[in-house]
Length: 135
Ligand SMILES: [Zn+2]
Image (tube, rainbow, N blue to C red; front, side, top):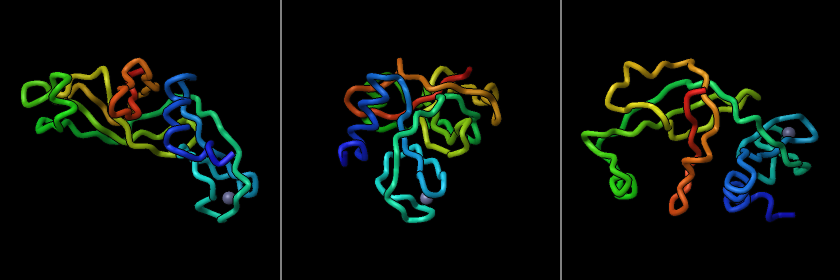
């Protein structure tokens, strides 16, 4: 079942099931959105799949106007910045994600603490990344 602990498995679940499927440590209960084979807290190996709700709150964000080539190909750039942030999942863990459905040119409209939900419609085939949008 080592296949369950790969980035490939993580993105397959994201695409096919529309969910973040991470792991839960059976020994100490630690939850991790990353599908890791070993618990970072107690170092145990008794990890089982855990499906996260996809609900979160935006902790912090930044809007990026000097963009990588992959984002420039989608039309982002100086005139249309995209947003990246850190969200806290409903279950507690924090995760880095792109923030979709917001206007990066007007960041005053994006609020720390706002409710966000997983956005799998915005999943990129070539360079997949987790995205959340306003709830
Ligand atoms: Zn543990």
